[in-house]
Image (tube, rainbow, N blue to C red; front, side, top):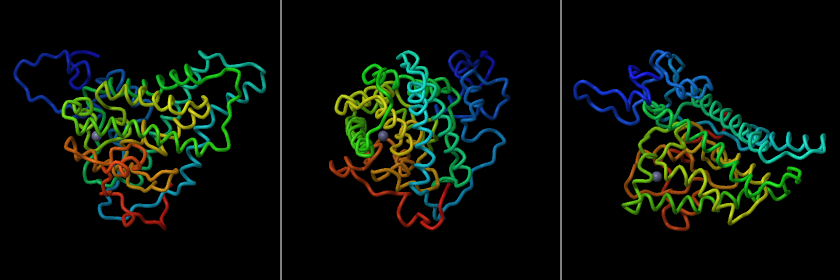
Length: 347
Ligand SMILES: [Zn+2]
């Protein structure tokens, strides 16, 4: 990183302009269009991991305004998600059975963080591929990229999510002598876990919109109007700590599941219940609405983000359950039954 680079995190804070210049908007994203030699460490990492939604010279997502969107069957989503989420538990199980050894908590931390990272990277790439294939609900507008001055923050937010959560779960729920396993009523556990977690998120989220002094903790999250998966964790620090640690911890206190169950609930959330990756890919031009045990709301978030700070609705992240119960449920704007082509399936 050098001060001469025009659009990097470092440049934004160290370069002193010789004359007053118009300050670019925080969400301005042009670095990926510039020469790779100007990229900083975090930007190179995003490119090398192939996580950018709109890299330079890449094909553009199709614009399909007014067209019905293809249906993404639940079984097809499960077929993609479940093996990838369960793979670390299977490897862990095989290791213990074949060797007779246990996995030390420190080794388990590195193993599950790396597994989480691989799962997250694969999911973002999958979202990006689907976006290129199907476009977005509001396809006339380009996606927000990773902001020029925020690439370090974006990457650290994602790294924090995939490392701090397993760390907390290993501290409170890991038993190195227990074989990884899931109970037969895991689907019920997943349902309850999602509802409890969403209860805490609902009230936090609603408060930030409706209590004037609390908006400051949520404002940055709404600066993206056309979100992409990499910006799903992009928020003010207070919200990031709530999302990454406090709300999952409160959920675990209400429902103290074992580590294997926690892992699956947490890994399935990005898809089934939206969070690390899916929270902000809401504009994806397809319809995974029938996934999971809960009514999905992820595709309405595109419009939700554009609404901004004023008193809003549909505050739940993973379900509209609490919105319905507490009177803040709003009609879907982009994702509607009529907007889905139920005969044409996505993949
Ligand atoms: Zn909000």
